[in-house]
Length: 113
Image (cartoon, rainbow, N blue to C red):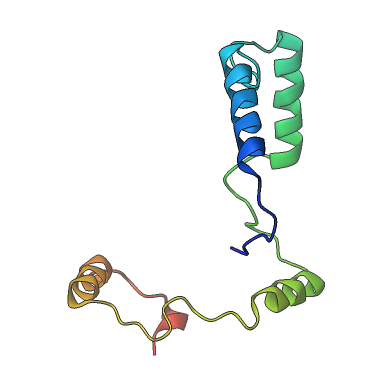
């Protein structure tokens, strides 16, 4: 994470801390905690979810494909990044766990070499 060149002074930090303590003490800043949606609002939320998610909320991109433009953007976004595993090796214990986890799995025909 990039470090900011700006710093809060001790006086500012104290003021921000006191303000937060006051908000929590007076039960402010808790989002919607303790409140309930009306039946009408619940109905609207449910309808909105149905429209945005379709029939199966867990399906995600199943049956769809990214456009060429989107694929290019995703490709450009990760270009130049160094793999977090670069220069590292899995421990013998980790390799054994992976081996056990994959034992007995059927490989797809187009994945076999």
